[in-house]
Amino acid sequence: MNAGPHLFWITSRAAGTAAMVLASASVCLGMLMAGRSGRGRGPELRALHETLSLTAIGAIAAEVVADAIVRAVRGATGVAGWSAVRDL
Image (tube, rainbow, N blue to C red):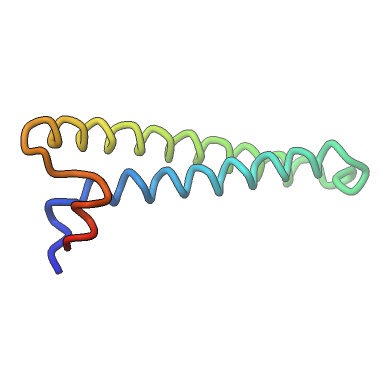
């Protein structure tokens, strides 16, 4: 199995999944901080919340770049998408 031709497609999907998980964790942590259970642990939870948010933004940027490369390659060769991965 050779993943070389599909590396950016796989990277795009993995970065998108990571971005969703990180953004969801950041939102949940922000809601926890806003509630009663987050009181008293502000500085360390805020630092974690900011780190999760910035990492999610980085994952979104990685997804956009990888997806742009996939679209450029697909336009040139016609190979991308689920059917290309299914044929690995």
